[in-house]
Image (cartoon, rainbow, N blue to C red; front, side, top):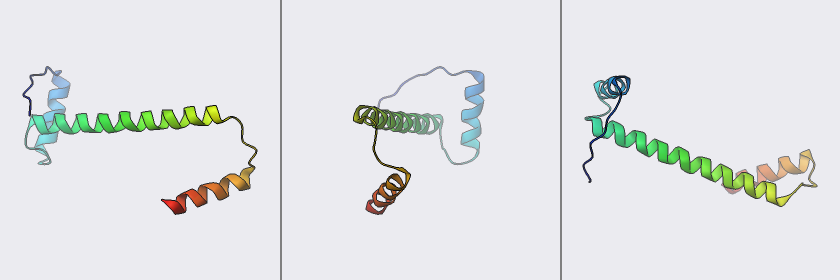
Amino acid sequence: MIKKSITVTETQEAWIQAQISTGQYASDSEVVREALREKQMRMAEIERIRNALNAAEESGFSSMDKEDIRASVKADMKLK
């Protein structure tokens, strides 16, 4: 791993220490790595949603009615 030095606010430091005090994390580094992983996952999910929205916009309007859409969603859920 690469060693880095970062600056945090007093509030952020207090939060980091509070996380460590729960026993879930052993060090500042573990807290920061977990926060970064969560941020990366959140950004990836936002990108996935953005791509899905763009694809939906590009596909145009649907001729499906409410029941057709409901059946399609149920079929998709069975595949997963």
